Length: 562
Image (cartoon, rainbow, N blue to C red; front, side):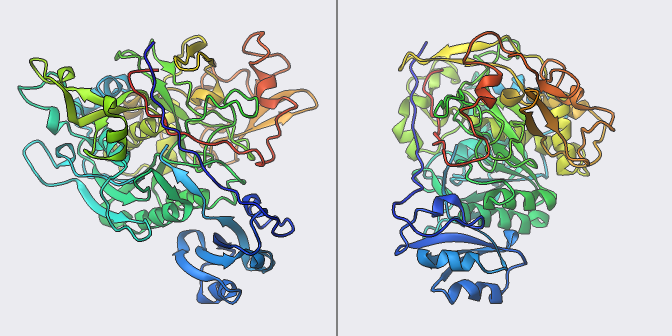
């Protein structure tokens, strides 16, 4: 077992001092703000944004910082003592803080079937994928083809206040972009023994920078970037948004500004793919990593992606769940997440030279001997390895681009349903890994809340021709304390309801769903261990209806392996 390198990025979201009485229109993390402080808040209104509505906040000493019309909101700097009065206005729907968030191929490409897809001509050509991340630094692998210097980064914009640069100073966004659409130009030719391509090597990339050099960003910057992607949808044929970032859940997805923004994109016809988060080892609430899905991955519309380990082989048969991959159900709403899993451990992709991650973790750079003929000496300035659900999400984003190239008429719901239906359902027996640093052992169980509908299989998805009808909202897990059972509850219009050709047994498979509708009965399904099964998720110590206990998120930057 080789040593891990981990970069932990923790959120700071609270300040001290009593502010005002509780209001269901004010986010919980605002309740303790000092009343004499000035705070940046996202104010959502019940109607489309107008100057008259903005005046309600400005008249209370507020200052407009940014309009967020896509969610009928605005980012406003306001004295905290005025929050309660503003919340009392009938036009105001919800007030939340401008929260901070973080950015959460050689074996992975054949593992998901992307290499076979390429032989059939599916390469993402003509499809625009918006990468909302730390920026994208232009590289040869992101050019039009092996003989062209024309960039496939067709649009770039920064949403960082006071920082117009769209270059990837952190090093995360370029790596994500390479997984989605790298064409292997800088590792192709007679001098190379390995070529590193992304899933959709001819897809166009829309670079929307929201994370700073340390990998930090805010809700407002992400909402603004999503709004821009929607506005540019027709211009650049943007059909997919990749969000390899997130933060803890503070309220229901029906109130969360990030969730409302991704739903707007979905309804505009854009597939939204979100990393589940890297808190699967978090046992802060004695749940062994369950209930740690990030926002906006907790939204039932989006495709939420967890991470698998390829273990250095192209076969799926020996792959295991990455124990850091966040697990469902979601806090507050108990949505069944993730929706599926994809390779996310030790993924080789593009390295922006001089970036924060490249300089902080030089040993992540790929040895030249790995892909240069004759056993090159030293390390690559082009490619390096990163691990996390941040790397798994772009696998699915690239896959969505292939499906949309094949059939441009697919809606986001049809794409999600098809990817989930065709995902591989076969998983190994429960596995475990021991952290070489702490000596702590983490167990993985392949259930609905760890692997969702299964493991991404792009050739199966491209070969499927059945079109789903209705929405593809992820279901809600409902616990019945009277008889101790847990069932999945579907929206009446969902694609995998009981009235369609493939029901829950096909989407999730018999090995994942237990029984026709009950996913947990009276007995523990994972064995006798007291740390496993039903009592872990729905035990007396866990209260899913509150967000008072917040999980911190970490971006996992791995060295040689888990």
